[in-house]
Image (cartoon, rainbow, N blue to C red; front, side, top):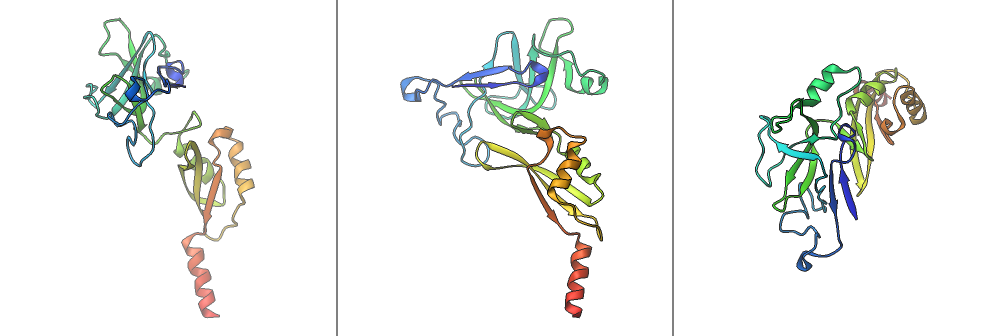
Length: 230
């Protein structure tokens, strides 16, 4: 089995790891407990390494001062090398934020891509993905800004407030779920209507598979008062 990691901005594949199916006692790459591959981070799940940088690629785990962190310490993952893109078309501001000069390279003009992913090195030189450094979510390989989905939902006249999160009720099957509060005194919209509304401005992978709605507190209090009065 092969595990590969990489953002689009680094030509998709930046690191790779191969599982041979052999355990540690056989000298294989089984990813045993000694380095914490089993149960890394929160919970008791099994976290597979994302491996080592592929040819002509460099990976750095850095702190906020762009200094390398020690083995086993989490930091933000930066990618350098031949696969790093030039930037975002028509977005010089975002390009300057995400593509920075490479302080470790002697090559003129070399840059690093700031992935926004948190990782750490294992003692055997493998990388383990830990999570995100920002609010960006990754669902089925697609990166999603929850704020963008929330703004699209709140643009619907029936939605007063929206919060979008990623849930993984079934291991290996992450999905977007939106929690909604309606507008006081307004008509509640159905899930189908809200999904049609989102489809106008968002790609399919950014449309939440779950929509959980609740009434505004003012409506609930008013209905409760009417019930007590009767």
